[in-house]
Length: 89
Image (cartoon, rainbow, N blue to C red; front, side, top):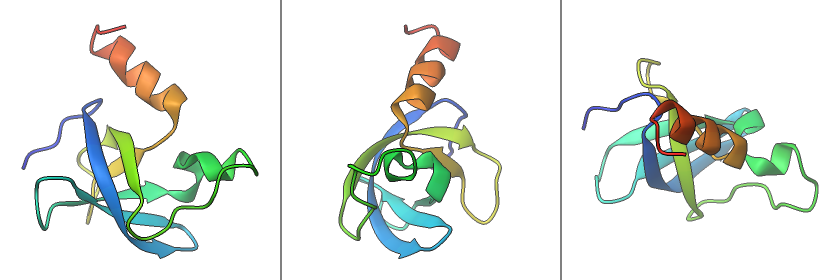
């Protein structure tokens, strides 16, 4: 699967670390991305649970070229920006 910046995806958290979460793209076994801790709503809102393995998220691609995994965001503001950049908002 080739990622594009500003693309939206549904993902599932497969691993959690202090710096963020590794996620697998739904419907694409073995295709992964990474969500930095600051790009998950729990970083900004104490009422939101921290990500957990098995959690389903809707994300946008922030950096499709980042290695070893593309960088995603689960923040609604970033998703809204991605939609505007794609001309969908």
